[in-house]
Length: 273
Image (cartoon, rainbow, N blue to C red; front, side):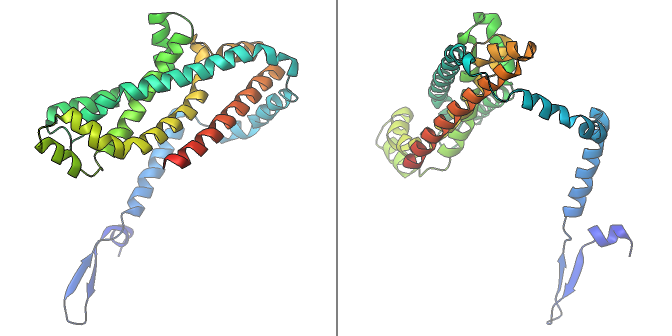
């Protein structure tokens, strides 16, 4: 028996009563072969070199060493961009999470039975979700100009797509008994949705919004690279000038801020679940 037969030919077992059972062999070896082939192709296309990585990785630690100790007297210049980053994240997360609710309702197959409407809503969310936040911020800077409004818009667009997908999937798992009973009594879909579906998904919805807000603080910190305001503006400036001690202070302030937000958010999410 050759290697192909050993890996892919179904095995036949004979039971004591004489009945034969055909058991298909695992497809795991086939999946591993595909993965190895894709990895080899990726290495060839991207020009990845392990030798260069090993020889140059020490430069990363050289730059990291230049950030320590951070320049503490630079902190007064960080406060305003840091607050801008938090404001962009908070406002953008709130706007995106609120605006997506009716779209998530229209994308739920147990609420809307029109396949065209459901398909259109899901396609819209998928298209928006594939748009990188930096690209959204760049487009927003051309529309609204440089500043935090562009960053807020980019965060809102990302939150809209991210929360929308999670929300309509949660809506499809709820108990529909109360919703169907209200519709039978003459209530509109919107009224039945607000009264019977929203209470069921609200805790997980708020939990996901808080989790998304945590990530948005990190995303917003680099939007300044395209002129969307926040910490990214001064971070790009200091990296360009190779003032790594100031960069270290910016990253330290961002780390502490994200840690505090995540701690508060985690405690709030535990109470919601």
